[in-house]
Length: 336
Image 1: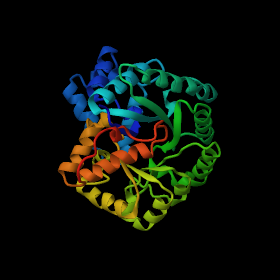
Image 2: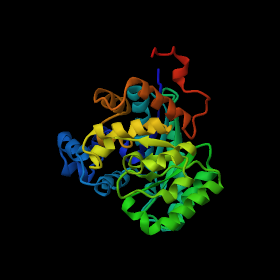
Image 3: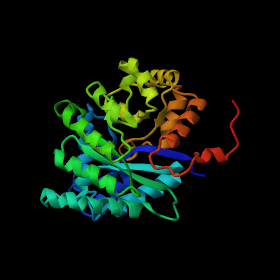
Image 4: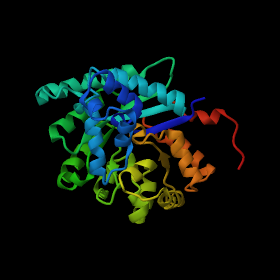
């Protein structure tokens, strides 16, 4: 019985390496020539990077393949795997629609084409044999011009049945020079009553409390308990949830060991701040949601009670979950 909600997964990092490699081989993509065996491709695709900026270059690579004519293939495989192998019943899939449009077209035409991207992903996500509820979070991007980011917000507001929220993605080293612009964009999103999250307080370079008042959830946010615990009472008072993606921090060099997250879970619990455990890029990591849970448990970062609290928090803080309770409430309660 699917029981899990996934609140932070990127389309660009969601496809498992073997499916992606098979696609490259079947279509004669140059990457298949560069990595002629799956083993070499997997090693390249899943190895740790030196920084978040280097890690995000993988998204650029994948985005070049995930375009309008291929989205149906990738999203349908993603939904099938999430439902069958991860027991996910609700998935918020985030992406920057502009980067899935035709790069050879002028900006105005690419902005118009973003609607088609959202429509294709929504249609591909509906599969009666795998009845997972899929909603999209549209990501603004730190490398995109203001006009495109504003158009992404307007697109999200015009498609509430398919899009459940707005995010900002891209290298966090670029936030500072555009902070006034980003604040303006999030204010604009809230003027439409859109739900908002942002990649924030993930690394030491991405700590910008100026954006916190405009967010419903915080993408990652681990540096708040690690470096700025004085902010936790404010985060708790706003009812903001952290989207913690454990394996990502090892892949980007943000943390050296998962044990460092023990402090994150402990201080957040003491302050009354909810945490949803997420994957971020399950394909790039080759680590799916149940294994994120298992890794935290077997390394004593959390206990089973904290796991259940996090699983329930994911449904409570979901932007588009249509029911009052998570499906686990249909099952008998576990003993303390």
